[in-house]
Length: 335
Picture (cartoon, rainbow, N blue to C red):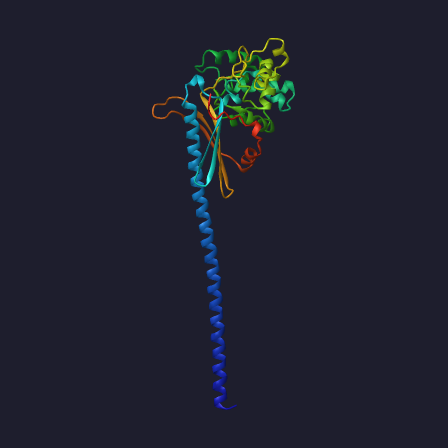
């Protein structure tokens, strides 16, 4: 092989090496560009989601404010027990449904028969249901030796005969949250989970509004014997029908179904607390919601206070979407 041939062969190998190196560099640049594009896309998507979440949070707050305004815009005695506020802002439809908190059983105020009735409706045997109710009363009553007077002392005396002196001394006072029911000794976790959707600690009264109560709560009132004739009359008042007692001339519901008199444990008058359920639906299909319990009193600067605030899960939002329109009590906020 001559020297010229060797030089040509060396130059060819060098060119091949350079070509391979350039191809590797181009491949690396392409991979880097692809990774960077994915990063930019993900960052933009995350930023859009954060922006939309902030917008949704603002819309939820605005909806609660409007619901509170609707309730506070009329005298307390004329306050609606339920209603709905709807508006559209930007690229979202917003609805806020509010209802008096007396739709639920107050864990701190309800009579033991009502609590026992709730447990029975949930499938607990009668004797066990009464025991659970007595345990709740024992828990919510301040322990002996505290400065409680009046009804607390009476409840203390009553619970001793049911649970004994040891249990009677374990009173913890009022429940701060319905979820604290899980701390009451002897109550199974599955029973607590089933009862929580029907309980509250914010109503502040022992009466339940049968017009707003769900089927489980109404059945619990029936088990407790809490004026079922009145409940039946309230049910049929708006449809022009009446129960057997009403046909006999004993109905206690007014013709408009807004007043029930003489029924133990029942009320149709709006209280100071309301539960507001907000749903925000964006045009792109994304949904967000929240639930708040507000106390409607004059606090000086603030006309109301938020007692409870929680975000709704996707399942709860789906349930809201699936709820038939006929089941939604909407008065437009008018008395």
